[in-house]
Image 1 (tube, rainbow, N blue to C red):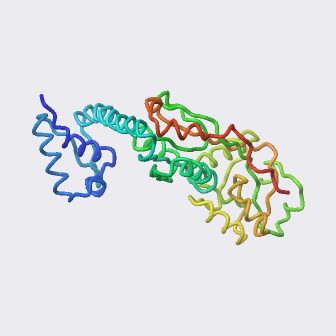
Image 2 (tube, one colour):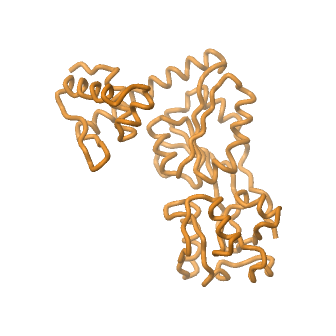
Image 3 (cartoon, rainbow, N blue to C red):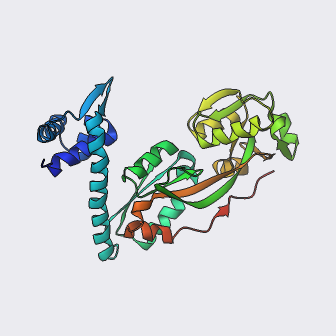
Length: 301
């Protein structure tokens, strides 16, 4: 069986995105052109590679098997490109980094700026999404690395500690709890909570801290965006628990009040990359710039 590489690349992009339209946009071609390449590949292998699942297009069992090999094939192709960029002294190339929403908004910019200053010829892109999104893109080699809260359990991934920031109780000015210099988790019992969506690392840590004290977490409002959470707190809808970096400017301006939260765990961020990326010159140059793990800015009372 001879597998044509051009259609295999198209297949790989469709399988990764589960969308003919997104694959076509990435390739800069029409959707019919993508469909034609998939059909050519299916004729070559004699098997159906995709099926419809509602609005999504998902690989069949044969497609899943082929995709596992396609990922490895094109990872090697990308690695070859990275190696050649290294030979050129990183005067050209591409560094693709992902970040969870909190990391992308408050921790990553300085690191990318320093990399760009040292390697101005390398194009740098940042993709922001939840941790699951970032890890999936690292595993399929779309991203060189990502910054997320917590450490992944997948043995294919390497995690290097980067930043540790403390969680604060965030209150609107004039809130009765603001009279205390520090709060315990139990002080928030019965308070309306404005929290991140279920599945976020911050939300998971908050739930664990409450459960350890026999308290239930009942969110008055669930939001995916830190800025929206801060606006809700400022409007008096409730109180929040957030990383210090996310609210530092708001605390300095007096828009919000932050109090140290005793018993709350730290929010730890790590830089994550695929073990098989270790020989990439672009990634190696990025890793050189990583600071030693540091604690976030001191808490504001």
